[in-house]
Figure 1: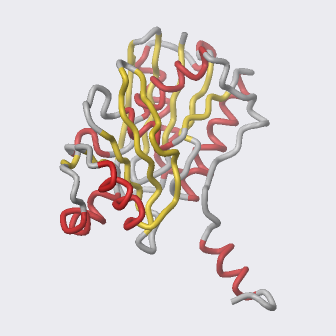
Figure 2: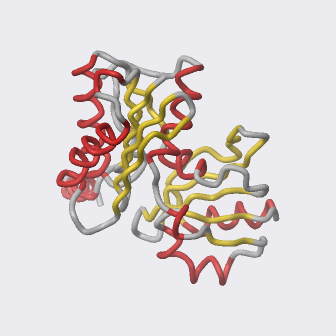
Length: 236
């Protein structure tokens, strides 16, 4: 089975090809260029480097969110367009779950932290049972203090990863009472290979949609929508 995986949900943009349990190619960048500039050239490069063609893909996997509103829209539109072109399904992978997959084999709790601004984070709590990722707390958008309280109450050693590590490191060091470490830079941000690994498992369980059905998961309304709501009569 050949899967093209895409993740443009955060600071890093990433594309990968998984073929029969082998990552044939992966391309990840984290720079100041917008994902609209980098994503399609990256996808072209991983397809060429894999020795395959787009028509050889059995599915297109996408990190469906939460994350950057703009990044999710770009990734979603790209995945939908490619899947429609080859008449193949879209496999939707929660961004936070894919981040946790980076830490496969870690023997404690795994807590991805994506900066959601306003001292909030897109997060969840995960662990591994054998080779399988187990969800202890579903992905959510909450204040950092809320997820830290949950972690502290569990008292289990924890590894933090995601772009939120840089943002929240000082607060974590001050307020986290459970034993913890931060993931190394090589595993800290989104990787399409992790999206692909989960996507293959989802596909085997029948969890996929057609291109028209796919849509991103935001968890929160955008800043523009909040500002518009506040301007409406009767709303603060």
